[in-house]
Image (cartoon, rainbow over all chains, first blue to last red):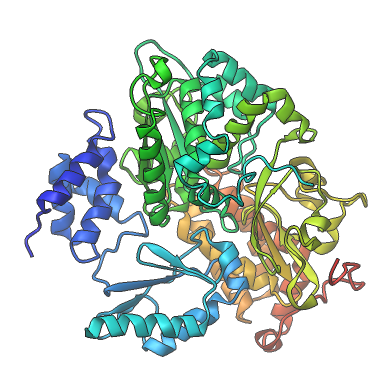
Length: 165
Length: 451
C-alpha cells in the first residue's frame, strides 16, 4: 500500500493544520494521526508515522513518542472492528468483567488478540465516560451501552453478516 | 421544585439545533455580554461565586483575573472537554444535547478574555460529539455569532475542536496544553502558570465544559442573583453524574441544597438502589476522591445531615469526609467488594500515569500488583501496611495531582474498610467464593432499603 493521502484527505489535513498559528503546525499532530490511522488500516506503521512527520515538517521521533503515549493509537495491526470494553470501577460494578469473559469465550480470543478471520480485536479499555450507561464499549465512532450477552451476540452476528456480503 | 439553569430546556425537542435554541432564549446572554465592558463580564463571574466544575473547585472569576495581557501577544481560552474521571459523564451530556449553550458560553468567555482563537480539547473517544460540536459551531457562525466583527463589536472569534487520543492525564491543564501542542501529555512544572505562559507560551485560561456553560445563566441573571442559589460558597447549580448500583443512573442538575440521602433515594434523582439492596459505600465526586462508608455518607461524623455541596461533602476532612470533586457519584451496594473495586481503580491509575515522576510511575504499579494479590487470595497482612506506606509516599510527591488521585482511593479504602482487606488475607479461599458484604458494619446500618 502506498502511503499517500487522497486529494480529499489532503484537503482535510490542510484544514486541520490551519486551526493553529503559523509555525505551530505540530499542534495538528494528534488530529492527523487519527486521520492517518483511519486511512491506513487501523494502526500506525512506522512508514505511516514518517509520512505524517513529513507533512508537519517535524522529526519522525516526535511522532513516535506521541503515538506510543496515547491509548487510541494502535502500534500493531488490529482487526477490522475493535471491541473496546470499559472495565474501570463503575463499569466493573455493573458486570463488565462478565461481558469481557463472554466475548473471550464467544470469539475464542484473549485480551489484545484478533480473531482468525481478522474481524474482531478485543481491547479492554479504561474509563470511557459512559459510567451511567454501564457496562459499555466503544465500537467504531460510537458507544454501545447497557451491554448484555444478547447485545454482544447480535453485534457479532451483524458484523459477520456484513462481512459475508 | 429544583432550580435548573443548564438543563432548563432539557425536555425541548431539537434544542441541539440553532433555531430551536434561539427561539427558547438562546444567545440572549451573548447579546447582553457584547454590550458590556469585558472587565464587567469578569466582575459578574466573580460575583457569581462560580467554582471550576472540573473537580478542583477553584473560583472561575479569580482564574480569569489572573490572565496576563501583555501587549501584542495573543491569549487563548482552552476548554477542557477531556472528561475522563471515572464516574463522570456530565460534560458529555452537555455537549451532546446542549451544544449551543456550550458554544454561547465559549463565545461570551472568549469575548471577556480576549481570545480570538478558542480551542475545545475533547477526549478522542467522544468522536461523534466532535461532529455535533462542529455542526453547532458552523450554525453559530452562519448566524453571525462567530467569525469577524461579531455583532459589530470589532471582536473576532473562531472556535476549533481538537481531538485528544485517550489519556486521562490530559485532563490536567498543563498536560492538556502540552497535548494541544502535539506532544505527550506530560504535565508541566508550575510556575509559570498557564495564565502567564500556557499554550505556545501565550497566556491561557483552561476551563471545564460545565464551567463555561454556567457563564450563560450568570450573564442572563447577573452574578448576584446566581450567587443566591445554593448555599455558602457552593453557589449556583451543579451537574452530577450518578452511576454504580442505583435505579436511575444519569445526569442531574442540583442546586446544592439537597441532602445526600435525598439524592440517592428520591425518585427525582437516583431512585434508590436496585432490588432493595442496602447501601455499602459511595465515592461522591469521581474516582479520585475518598470512598466513604454508608454511615459517614448520609451523616457527618458530628451526626449532622450531609448535603450535596462542596463544604458538606468535605466535612470531616479525609478522615471522616470526602469531596465534591467532579460530581461523579458512584454508589456501591451490599454485594460489592471494596478490595476488588479498589483494585480496578488502581489499575486505571497505573494505566494512566504519564510516567514522568517515579513515585507515581512505580507506585501505581506496585499498588495495583499488591491489590491484585489481596483480591485473589494471595495477600499477606503486611501487604496492607505496605499499601498504606506506598500511597503515603506518592501523595504530594509528584508534579501533578494524578499521584494524589491514585493515592486517595487506596488510602480511604484501607482507612474505612481495613477489616475487609484483612478478611481477604485470612480467608483466601472463602474470599474467592463470596463477598464480605456488610460485615463491616457492627450494627445493621440504619439505611432504608427504599426511601
